Image (cartoon, rainbow, N blue to C red; front, side, top):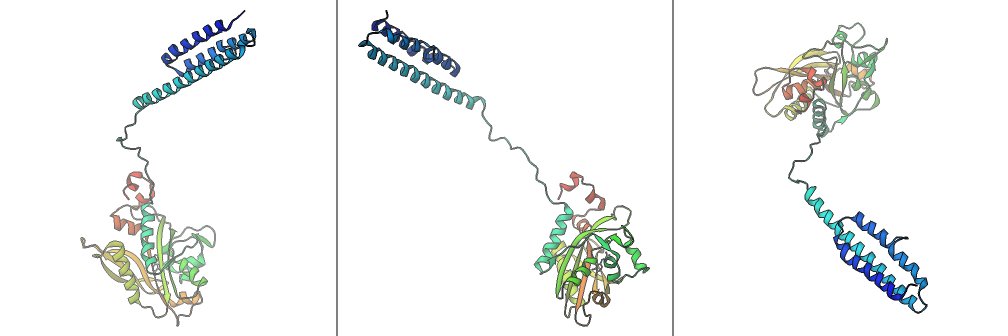
Length: 335
Ligand code: DAH
């Protein structure tokens, strides 16, 4: 027969064990093992609870209370120890896993715009500030827009200047951005102020200055009473903005079927004696106005076409057009 006294002794043994051993435990796993040993379903404290039935009705509540107190004591002591171990572990993490915040960060290279896109954007910016609108046209064109409407009839020798890629009898990859002039004028009534950047194609063999795919920007201003003086002003302003104040500019007579008169624009850098051609331009030919249904007696206009690659080559002093299309990062990273 178990007595209250026996139980008290057992409880005291466990209490001492708890007081002495728990503070020595140095892992959370060990704490859990001890918890199971003492408080688990088959643990020591559970066994003592089972003995309650053997006590007298008077002793039973006393013993029950003592056991409950023991259970709480064990639970609290183990939980306390686990907390202490946790914060110690954390502190040791701080010392073994420290981060050197003075180390340079990991470098993630940013992408950026291709130099040709940058030049195109720069040109667009200049003209947007002057009230122009940026428009686009198709890269696959009909002969009509690429040639005929621009006053370049079939068998006209000027067609050879725009040696083109034909897709079928009447369709070709546009050889210049000038056809967009026609499309816009067919769509809208004057006045108009547009620029059209875009890709063009010609059957040129690739070398340092030629590429079968290249880019142009077309400019067109149509309004009453425009003159060559207005065109000169616009081009001068553009050259100053794009190349810098100290660039010189000159006009030379030229021929384009869609302008009359036609000019060639040259620029010269302050450090050079050499004149370089930058664009073709001119006053829109009355025949072109007639083709789009404008009355040449009522409106005047001027236009130019320039090569974006050429602009980029002059601006950045690049001597081989092929560099723009090779996607060599050593080249591209410089812009
Ligand atoms: N389309 C011409 C070319 O590709 C360039 C050009 C010349 C465009 C005169 C024009 C212009 O708008 O007026 O060679």
